[in-house]
Structures are given as structure tokens and as C-alpha cells.
Length: 462
Image 1 (cartoon, one colour):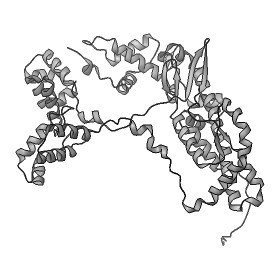
Image 2 (cartoon, one colour):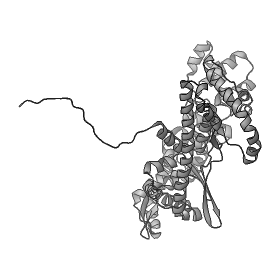
Image 3 (tube, one colour):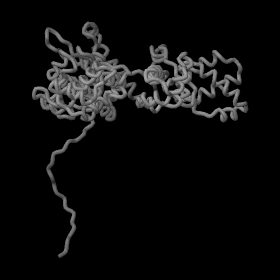
Image 4 (cartoon, one colour):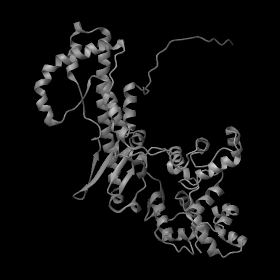
């Protein structure tokens, strides 16, 4: 039997989703936060001549009379700009030099802060140079990352001279700067704070691993002191900063602007999409006249303008679609989590993307994109939209309870416990059971660890 391989042409009818540029734009805009969308709109306003910022109503009427007269001149100006675009003509925004941000005080970096203190305390040129070299080798956590012998060889001086410069730096704030290891950092802070003692020094030098695991009995037995003395010394040590350099971290502060505003009016919750942070857009119809004047434009110009007006129309449509989707999703969340808005986190209900998608009649991925990096301002505070989605655990009167609500209850139970006799995970399980919440001891331990709460041994006070 002979097998023949041939090439044939045939037609197949099938359905598939095509990711067009327009669809990509709509998805990208839906995922944007309010601040990101404002930046995107500003960029489009600068690049697309068919986009205009809508004027306030009181200004619109006054400008309507002169708008018609200026249409012709606007078209001519734009055509002149388009035809001359290849000559490298650029417009410099002189306002950039007068930006308010250029006058706002910037938080100094750790290096700048230490350099400032060094120049106030050192006058000799060589010692200043050595000090600056040492400061340049201090990492973001505040630890020295170079050996003194290496510095001495670099400057061809004695190690004592380098050590003298380092000792000056170690008197600077934040205290603990310029050491090579954690124990030295903590001891230096104790010295500057005037809380140094034989017991705290011994614990830091010899028992930091035991301190991390709250083995106070072991420390007391090893140092032959009472556990109450160890407790007092440990309380002092825990006030120290193991990474003092991070106090001058250069990370920028990121401000959150709510995308959704929820207010209670006459007993009802009103949902408002916060779209006041970016300008209202409209398509500049004056340039459409150019497209109708075929004699005045080239084919290249006509294609460029058609692309730009299409881009402008899609941007407006995508922004409006984003607003409607956000409103529907937020309204659905508010309706489901009304008890939470009334009474607080204890009444947060379990919720998943599928539930909201079915109620809003969209795909789960759309709900996911609509809730990513979005925040809602509510009477209970500012929350990320993702916060309202949580799994259900246990049962309470035949209804599941949100895992976030259970975590909050565990926090409250531990806050009210007797510090001398802290509650075990098994005891917490029993208390939750009395509230009709049935979960395992392992689940309690998991939630406790996620909340950053230590074990019974770590929480115990003597």
C-alpha cells in the first residue's frame, strides 16, 4: 500500500477572537487607574490634532461666535505644521522650567544626609576625603561594605586614621550607621540612646537567635538572671532599628486617588466614577473640512488624518466603555457588600469574580481588569476593589464567612487575650466555634501567620 502526500487548498469556516489595535486600546484603558488614564489622555491631547479639551459650559457660549472664524486659520496652521514636520521643527515647553515640582523640597538620600553632617564636623581635607569615601561604601541599610585596611591602602594612611574618620561618621544620625554587622549596629544605638547595660549587651552579643524565637527562659537560664529582667531588656532591644539606613530610603511616595466614590445619601449608597481628574474630550470637527477638500491635501496627508480621527473616536469610546464597566462592577460590589459598608469588616461577604461577572453580564477577565489597581472610597475607608473579593470559610448559620472577616476576628481575640496566658490556636478555634464559625486549628495558624502575629510563646509576657 502506497501513501501519497499531497497539498490541497480548502476553505474552513471558524470563529476566533482577533486582537485588533482598537480592542487592545480598550483593554489597556480599562486596566488603567485614574492617574494613569489622566496621563494617557494628556499625551493623546499633545499628539492627536483631532482631540480637544472640552471647555466649561460658561466659556463655550462665549467662544462659539469666534470659533467659526478661526476654523480656516486653524486648518491652515495645522497643514503648515504637517507639511513642515520633516524639517525637525520642535516646540519647547518653557513652562517645564517653571514646573512646581522643581521647587518642592526633595527628601535627601542617606549619602546626602551623611555628607552634610560630615562637612559640618570635619575641616581637614584628607579626613574629609576619607570620610566621603567611607560614606560612599555604606549600603542602603546603613552598613559599611568595605574593609578599613583596604581604605587605608587606597589613601596610603594608617588604619587608625581611617578608624578615626569612621568613628566620627558613627556619631551621625540615624544612629547605628557605619557598622559592619547587626550586633555592632544595635550596640551603637544603645550607646547613643543611653540604654546600654551589661544584660542588653550580653543578649545582643550571644543570644540574638534565641531572642528572635522568643526563648526568654533559655536566655535567663544561660545568663543566670530572672526572666523578668530578660523581658525588660528584650523590650528595650526590640525598639532598636536593625536597618537604620532605610529611614532615608529614596523610594518615592505613591499617592492613591480613588477611582470610585461611594457615599450614603438618604439611606442609599450612591456610586460615582471619579472621572473628574482628567479633561472631557471631544473631536475637533474643524479638521474634518480638510478631508472634504481633496484638492488641498495629498494622499499621505489624507491617510494620516483618517488614522488620527479614527484613533480619537476609539479613545472616546474606550473611555466611555471604561466608565460604564467600572460603574456596573462597583454598583454590583456595593449592593452585595452593603452590610460591610453599614457595619464594618466583620460583615464582609465572600465574593468571587464569577459572581460579579454573571450579575453584570460580562466575562470574568473583564471584571478582573476593571478591579486591577482600582480603589474605592467608602464610608468605611479607602479599599482596593480586589479587597472585596475573598473566599468563604466555615459556615455561619449555613452561610459562608469571608476569610478577611475571620482574620479580623482572630486579631480582635488576640488583642483582648491575657498576655501572661496567651491563647493557643486550639483555644481560638473554640472561641470562633461559639460564634458559629467552624475552622480547623491549622487554618487559624495560617491566618495568624499571614497577619504577622507570633505564636503563643512569642506573645507571652512574664
